[in-house]
Amino acid sequence: MLWLRDKPAALLSVSPKSTVPVLQFEKGEVLEQSLDIMFWALRQNDPGQWLKSSSLQNAEQIIRQNDEDFKYYLDRYKYADCYPEYSKLDYRQQAEQFLLTLKNA
Image 1: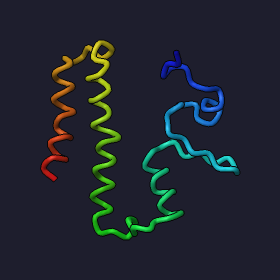
Image 2: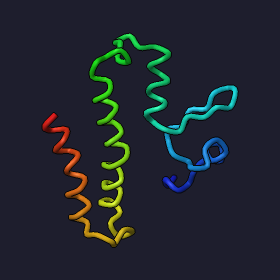
Image 3: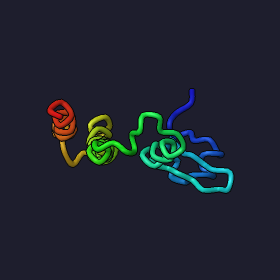
């Protein structure tokens, strides 16, 4: 069985943080953030004109909240034993705040 901690050597050589996704270009440049990869892909081909959308700034803010705040609390909720500073319920309630934001958007 392959575990998340069992990172392939090729991934570690490109990205010591070993986060996924990772995009490596032929000349060696590496993008390690999902949002950076999404924007790179849209700059290559944007048939829906998303990059020109007036709601792009709002969408980018929601994505960043998801990737930063929500993921932070979600990970602590899932692995509460590793983060005993607060209870599992506290972490869940913090993560729920982001979900409520989406619901009310």
